[in-house]
Image (tube, rainbow, N blue to C red):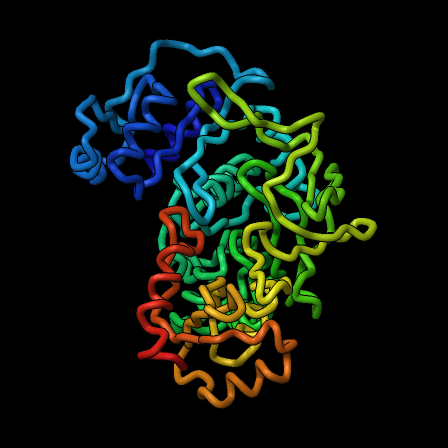
Length: 407
């Protein structure tokens, strides 16, 4: 809410570190995060206080109005700890990543070279602010003199938004909302999950004058690369590197060097496991050619089928290329003969393709080792609290439905 954004902005300006407590933490996770971060105050919107109590927090919960200042604070210094966020990946317990003032300020400066937000613009930020993509979007707009709109995406678009901070799922919400063509939006700034061409084309019809920008990065890396438009024909293309970013491949993994990297992870022994000699990887596999980056998925995503490497990202790209398929996710499932085999779930928009159309398309698009053993239609893909694919939940859904509801 607006009050929480005011608190975050004031704290950052004063050099006070902010810990983002995302709303989907489990009780034990919240306890662990608070033990590590040791915040001087816990601030939440009034409607979140009951939730904190249910999670077992029995301390004082402040609001933007009740929080009192100790007096005039010193201006923040570049190396001062700025933000402690929570990242959980697709599996595992949350990790607390730490970024400093210099990293954040540099990221904002790099935005000026790529995006065109300025004074007088209206920036729609419809996502939750405990997601760093949307918190960054709000601060990006405010620091550039723009008006920031935190309301739902349809409200923002109806009030002449010029920019939209988005993720692919919100883009589909816009398409499905039925809102007519909106000519005021000049730029869409998207991140998080892969944004297939079908999704971009659908949004472009609703926002015909918007430049569609999708960028790759991570909590630990900040900006890495971006592409603009409807996306490249190569489904592995991740665009060109941001200014000031170097990338190289070591043992198949993308390593990044820039002045926007995080400091490390907050642990009981301090901030550890940060960049080594200025370089950092989050385990994404890829290829660098000049200033262009290709991504082939996370190192742990690869499915080993009868000794052959199968890339889930290629199967997902093939499925989302089908008209009517808005999302797809592919994982490895146990196979008695081959050890492991790919299986997929899809979210269908409207009537969608028939079963025969899906399999005909996959046979024409994928090599035989990449053919999934199952394609299951689901209402929505299971997500972790941070919005990433919940692979364990998806595996359970596929296993339960394998003999009952295959497409």
